Length: 317
Image 1 (cartoon, rainbow, N blue to C red):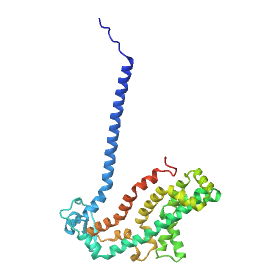
Image 2 (image 1 turned 135 degrees about the horizontal axis):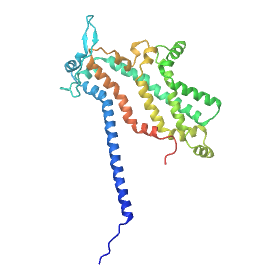
Image 3 (image 1 turned 60 degrees about the vertical axis):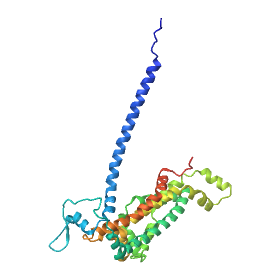
Image 4 (image 1 turned 45 degrees about the horizontal axis):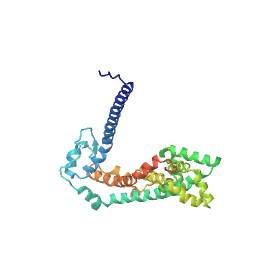
């Protein structure tokens, strides 16, 4: 006669744990799916203007006029007046045309002139701001004292202020130094901007003191510590600062408008707003050319940007 098997309490516990694990797994998949859909929706909203600008730059002038001509109508004075009408947003042109780019690159050299104005204004700011920031950040990170705290606190206050607040003082100082209508009026405030100093100081302060002490025991001086320890460990932060500073000043508008009265010296960011409403196709092409440097810098430095944001200046394990 067979003996009846009694239920094992452990089986019930294992079944309950397995059921709970399946529920948690399903719930995690659900949360990931919802988060992915929300992120995809925001990505679509953010990327739509960029994609629309790039694709519309390859449309012919007649196709652009047929799609966006209803946005403007001619007033009695002969000017263009904005009216509220639904336009035909097209992402794929009927016929791919390079006429807008031919006009911008070969027939209208003023666009390229403004592009190189942007390069001339932004390049020195990025390079020398990082040099100043590295040196100043090393001093803030290595030395303590009341004077250091006061100066660093002043840097933080200046960083929190929007540029519009310091625009009048910058104008007065530039006028006193007779730098108005010169590139130096843009370069000097940008080179001593506090953003990169604040960012790099926070990274350098997280460098383990034991590494610096070991270098000092080996006979390393301040310059060697700065060049061989601080700079390599802060490479990600330096690249992050370079990318953010470049994008910030590449899109500047107020500074050249106020400090440069000569329109020939204005960057492309200012000139974009002055393109005639009848040249919508040219506006698309110029905007696409204007976006290329920012996209290349971001794509090239994306790894450094993420590393600089997530890596907090210590030694990686």
